[in-house]
Length: 250
Image (cartoon, rainbow, N blue to C red; front, side):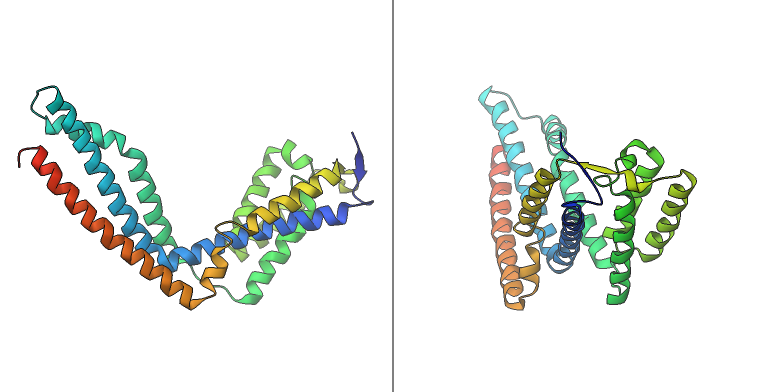
């Protein structure tokens, strides 16, 4: 197995790709937040209608099973059974609603602050990124610090990441870390894998939301599309309700 010391060969490219990958992931999260800020209410309303339709159809299916057995449908049993079957849909609806509300509360930052967050993250990543320093994965405390750094970076928490930098340096100092001895295994394979991962991120949601959000005409078309779907599902839900009432004998 090939070992390449960080001071030699392709390490600078490897490090650059790691940071680039993380930046694309973070940008994707920011685009997702902006997307939910702009379209979240429509998305939540549409999904809620879809959940209502699924719930009614499940009740109808349960009702038909009673009727096919020549029995009178027991609505209390049907309700209890369907509620259990719908748990995952309810949780998804709750998550979408919370994500939309969070996007409305998000506070903007100055460009200078955003750049400062990025700069500090890069400084910390060069020290304790798990793909650069294997000791991070071996130390529970250091791994916890790294996870907190990632959260602060992706959420643009400047004060938090500044404080974490102090804690990271203190930990490394107290534990006599010698980063000059870090090695990267099979670095060429890892570089190719990172390049492929970056390409995948750039060509899929949520990163692709960027191109929609930059075009006001496309945004308006998206809003109209969602609004149209909402009206269609309202009609569909009402038809399902009528059919269910007929099954239940009014």
